[in-house]
Image (cartoon, rainbow over all chains, first blue to last red; front, side):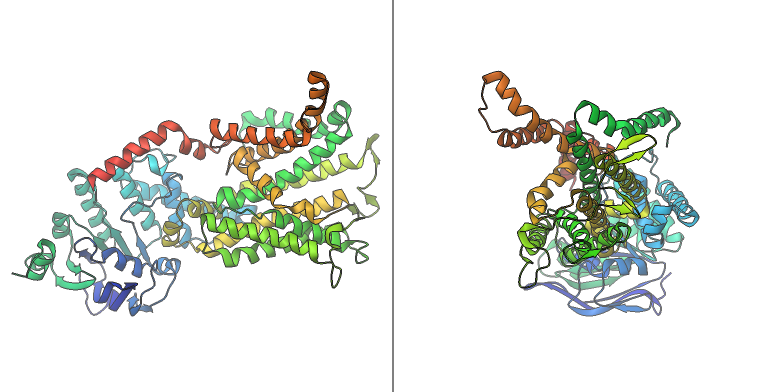
Length: 259
Length: 364
């Protein structure tokens, strides 16, 4: 569970602005190894911005963050992916015209090495690696519960399957931290239920999960701790039950003065 | 390779081997030459296919790499500088040099996408051509618009491909010899393309084509992978350029105009982006069709109207444009699309996709 003195991801005074708009200001938080950590807040609160900062898609303007003991401030996405942060996207960003299997195989890219020479000669090492990649991709497809011919194009999968395929692709990068941006968005109750089970399995396998979600029930049932963002600031942090009753949080969601 | 394809492949191989002699006998020597050019263009189209078809980077200046390969050969193997290096040095050197130019073009343009990349690459292609056109003063390097002539033919030892040879009791004129040489190189390029397509690198290219941001987030070093695509594509271009110079014996800047780049791009798009077979088909058609029109349109008008009403040359471009429009309307994914592209562009799918989108919107 929570090991606050040895966090996996630690944000210290992280700020990001777009022109005059402070999308994030002075956000500090720490995520322990093995936690499922929730990130909630009204639309436009800066949740996805925070994701983009820790995955390197945005460069932060203030502060820095430490992942697995290494400090990062300006960094390319692929470096962070290699360090062990994998993510999914709020609006699904699969490789739509590649097959389900290929999508996951691309995820394996960062942990494999064969280059041009291997591709041209198809030497023993390259073939073994390619077999291992395909094998791992098939396993992951089963793991997230997509029961379809492997040649199915990603865009032909159902909505829920596409969400799960994104998770499988992220898992293929062998992450330490899996960051999920609204994985349950648009899912029905059954799909959300199986997603919950999947996330628990993932956590049990030793991967830390960072979760943006609007589904309060899912957050409450799943997360060990939650941070609430509003207008780019952290307004509350703690266990879900406690956060739910926080007056500042209620005000942020319902508007008006904090009662 | 599938077993049931074996007889088909054998038949194709025999047809390709007999092609120059059959063409020579039926249509004349000129058409063998056209076949040689078709092979050069196929190599170019396959090179561009790596950049455009696999990695999804729109390159409108591709002919520049062809020019680099050709001029490299011309300068190192002609009386221009009195250098007469053997082709087995000059040809790989040209490919390597083109590869470097590919990286040189790729490096500053990596952050650009879509239309912006197209415009910068277009500029690059023109810069190379204009350089070649003007590098005759103050020091004469490229001989300017006059071009470089009397380029050495491709030769190995005493065996020069510039003249006719008796082999196996058959007379092989220069065009035939070049045909076989080009065929060999084309097969090499096809082999390399196929191997890359099905590899970890090929998947990375396609991932970048599909969604660059997602590819980056999945840990792909998009900079290096895109550079690799540019470099590989350019290498094929440089190779083809060297062969062109050795075959033609003459190079001048006007062979490397923007029109050529567009022509090569048309081969890729028309034939079927990302599909090696389609790209080859596109290359063959776009070389043969204009020639057929050029040779056929004049006499046909004479026969029909008794005089030439429209200049065959302008008619050629008109017909060519019409053919392109027709193909794009009737087969938007190309004549022989990759299976993926075909599914991507089928009309039913577009509708089902739009429906799906609305469903998503409502669920938000």
